[in-house]
Structure formats: structure tokens, C-alpha cells
Length: 98
Picture (cartoon, rainbow, N blue to C red):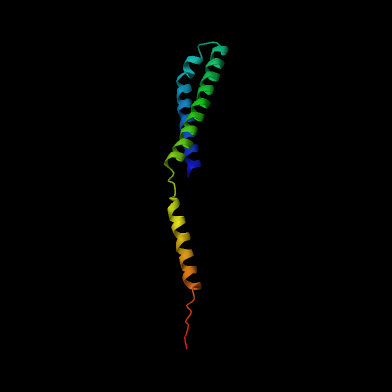
């Protein structure tokens, strides 16, 4: 599920960049090719940086939110198992005196 969230974040960022670039499509027809190439490269560099940043936030968020299992439960189970084996192996001896 975490990988799905990261992929969804990346798709959202790419769609936002696509919308941003589509605004400049009409402007690109009136400017030189080099300006259009520069804008296109600039937008994709920022899109990749934003995608990496959003993915990094997703990973950090999942690390913080993921619950930690308490260690004392495992220790308690071991203690209970030890008590059970001790109780089953205990023998009673009776002595008779003359």
C-alpha cells in the first residue's frame, strides 16, 4: 500500500507539471525554440525534484506512523512458557520414615 501511495504522489506531481507546461504552449508558439527548450527543461528538473521530495515525505511519513510492537509482550510470553515447562517438569517426592 505504501508503494501505491508513492506512485500516486508521483502521478499527481507529473499532472501538475503537465498543467503548468500546457499554460505555456500558446506562448511557446510566439517565442524562439531555445526559450521553449529552456522552459521545458526547467519545468522537468523542478518536476523531478518535487517528485523526489514528495516521495521522500511519503517514506518519512510511513516510518513515523508505523507502530512499534511492544517488546514486553514477547518477554511475557517467554516467561509464561518457561513457567509452564517448569510446572510440568516438577516432581514431588515423598519420603517415608520407619
